[in-house]
Image (cartoon, rainbow, N blue to C red; front, side, top):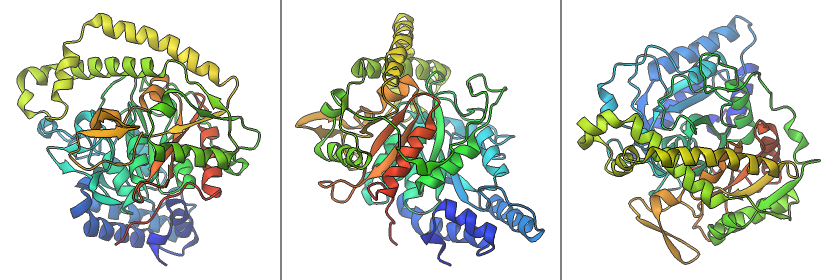
Length: 464
């Protein structure tokens, strides 16, 4: 059986059926990582000993005739801000190398292990999750598997690249201002930013406590939904986890039947290139959406998100900024310093605005179930690029990849990033954000399934 031809949800099915062993799948994944990562640079840590032990445990379960858990034998990896027992949690930094190794796995890593997942290692990212490109000066840039001269996006760039390169079928990342959706868009894989507070963040290195989300990347919509269901759990030990119960995705095959689907215009149209607009138009046709919807105060929402991000990020790292500033990532240190110096009145005003903003956004979902928008304004830029062109206007490359994601995460809405392959990009993808009301991930996933079934949203294999 050709393991590389299988999506993650199919791998789990094949292992349960006895068509292939978890050890065989794990060894194939290790071989793929060793073959490709010298170029892609997705991994910063490899957990092969642990992976082989976890895979052998799955095979032993099956040999005993026990029922296997939903992700039995599925290889995955995590952004290196997740705690892994015995490993130092780098969070993309040089400074954290001096920290002691984690004594426990992160909550979501525990969830994956309990579901039978096999952990292959930790993945590259922008330092302290502050960036959209994963051009990490400490560990090197992660390269886009579809064109290794281009960025993989960030800050979860290693997560997107590892799935796109076929190293693993599933990865776990974080998204504050777009750090799941941007790499998913630029690498052409599926991504899910859940509702703010849906998944526990315990055991992950923080960036912006009041905006941070954790979520999965995957090789297919079914894989994404399967992993999301596994990750769900109330966590009374994490005050930032607001979920009171598990809400299974349910029947994806309902698609958009009975759903009201709209297309975001205005800010989301004006800040998108022609290929990004084409991606949305393609998705809209597939879902039968034609009405244009205005998202309230999008530019102001992005501005307020910048203020909250800088202020909380700068405050978190204030001691190191005073004593070890030379050890910070050159691409982000100025923003951390500026955030640490920001007047508290600005931060308070941004948070007050956020409450009003969230109410205005949520009001949209009285009339709409799902809204569509581009995930990134352009496809992946060349590594080192300082500017991107959007409709004839030059924008700073690194912050502008989050132009279209920041307003959405600031409102806390769940989003599926669905990979589309428009024309005019030299074969590179741009994802569409499938946005739903808070706590309605199921609707975004149903719409994603409809896009996949229609053949307009899918991943593409990378050779060799």
